[in-house]
Image (cartoon, rainbow over all chains, first blue to last red; front, side, top):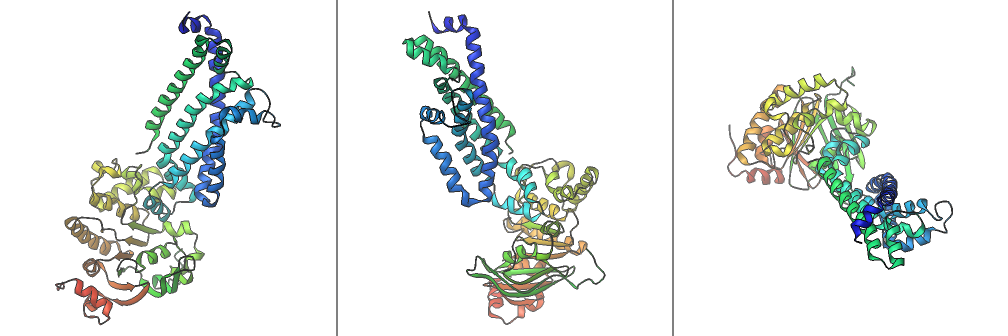
Length: 210
Length: 254
């Protein structure tokens, strides 16, 4: 029996696991963007915080993903077995590229443009929304795109802590020593990652101010 | 803001010092007045404090000591946003917003001030014509679709948009080729005479200073060396002035 037969025969389960997978990634990314972009903007205003925040986000990235899931299980409120813990881990993982790209993007806006905007009498908020964010949109979106693709991959490990997703097939396949079952998880996950990359890349090109 | 007791000078610096974080003084004890409606040129070598002086006027910087007055009121007492919106600002790199069309760039301050869209559009057209750009042809272009000279014209139009009584210009023609520069200088002189604005114009080009200034203030190492009308400037005795006059090579005569 080849992988595609397997996928077709189990299409309800495949679909359900894919949806679980997507939900994990979507929720984690939404939270990571809501935290990471404002945090990146704050760093451009308070450079003193930069070392600490980027350092902390860096540490999150360095921890192997399976270990990160493991660490979170005993943590009260956000921990435990299941989807919530997985979302927290994915969010922590996604923060670094988002914070860093927001910070780099906004700091990289041409100083002459910013100075002129200030000299024209724009308020801090007007400069942020009308000048700095539009001009760094491409870089910020690139960070979100990288973070999303990473999340799709890391989310396969969420199955290890009972959060579901396409990782369920991968772990089951490993346990059964059945390559087909492993691939039935890995192939859809890879397809999701490619789709996420392509669609966010498209959005990046559409929304980038030139 | 126009009160009954209008001060005679639109801008005045009184014993202004500016230091960066307590370090070297970029300006030392600078005092000068800009009369209402005149074009005062700030001339000096690189690093002489010309640009610093401009930024003190629209409060992009605040003096370490002394005071800068705009319309008789200390800049630190002005609301910086209100102050900047009544002072047009043109800089060498123009600083046009690269993601906005010419129309939106020129209409920037009016739209910040909450003008009606039709009024902004009419004003933008008027200004583009004033600086010699056909609105139908240029209004919808992006800055990168313009030549250097055209961008600089747009920069001037933007600075004039909300009809500010004061204009600050920081080497606005510095990056242009000589032919375009001469063209814009000539047009600018006519425009300045017609509009009657108070203009503070920064340059390191003595030729430009002589051509455009009603008076020329020469700065060196953050100090005011001399202030003269162009005619007297050529005959002035201060060594730094003479250094600049010599740099002319063949002095311009009328």
